[in-house]
Length: 148
Image 1 (tube, helix red, strand yellow):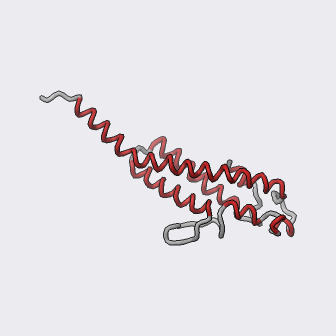
Image 2 (cartoon, helix red, strand yellow; image 1 turned 30 degrees about the horizontal axis):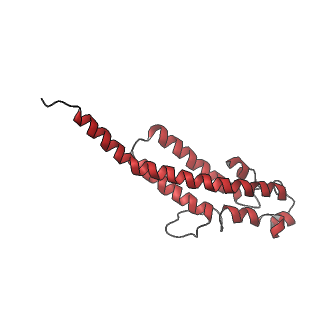
Image 3 (cartoon, rainbow, N blue to C red; image 1 turned 90 degrees about the vertical axis):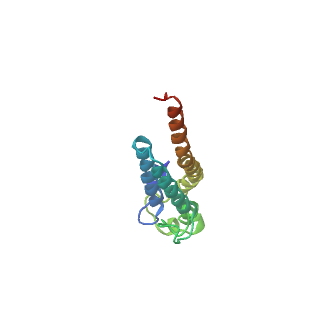
């Protein structure tokens, strides 16, 4: 879904930055799933997912949020650049700035945010259950050993 936001006008809006941060986070998730079998990796990714959700939903910049893409979240940023809201599409005739395309981006943004909420909970559950899995595997291997 990220290419939908990457295909926006770089000079008029910061919409593409939402997709860039999400793609980098997705690559980190894939890398952690492939090689990172430590609990610390999943905890760090869960925190990063929290920051990304704050960014997508439009949390205010604070000490708890190290980066922010725009003044608002993803949906208000899309709505702000539309011509119906008196945004930049009405005044500038630039590429990727047409109301039908922006409407499509708005529809995709709902699914995009829901997908990131689900990903946050999956990574969070993986961070929480990782120590329990290691403990149960260690316990079962100790039970199978014979006293010498």
